[in-house]
Each structure stands twice: as C-alpha cells, then as structure tokens.
Image (cartoon, rainbow, N blue to C red; front, side, top):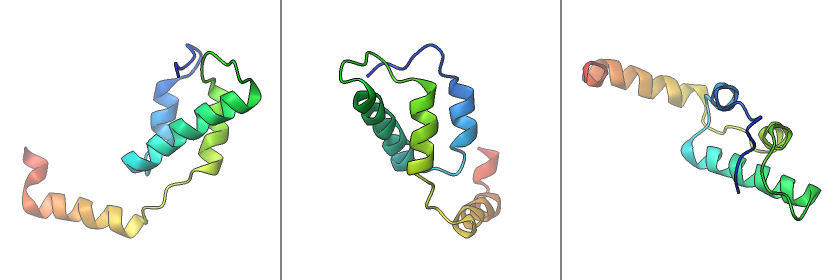
Amino acid sequence: MPVSDEVCLAELVEHTQKYSGAEITAVCREAALLALQEDIHAQSIMGRHFRCALTVVTPRIPDSLIQFYADYQQQSGLHTL
C-alpha cells in the first residue's frame, strides 16, 4: 500500500533506531492494517497509522546485544571498511 506524502520518512527512521529489519517490516504491516481497519478502501498509509503501529510493535533487541555488535565492529576492523 502506498505511503501518504505527509509521512516524514526521516521521522520514521529516527523512531526505529533500535528496530531490526523484521521489526520494521512488522511496523509497516501493522500501519497498513490500521489504515484498512479505519477505511477498507484506504489508498495510502498516513503518519497516524505509523505512530500507532510504533506503539504496538516495539523493538526487542536488548541494548547489551547492540553494544556487543558495536564492540565487535570496532575490534574486528570492520568500521574501517
């Protein structure tokens, strides 16, 4: 389903910093379902649908795992690529 022009992608990126790819996919699907629940003939997903979806789908990756990968990246030299 298309996304409305009023949706700020930069804002979505900011609010999904700790989300995995699968979780971002879930947010998009939830937003689409919310739009269809509101209006079965909806033509696009609005910002309000994404904001609501972000309250339903939350990030599940613990900060400790994110830190582990950040440390690994620094120690392995991958940050220089």
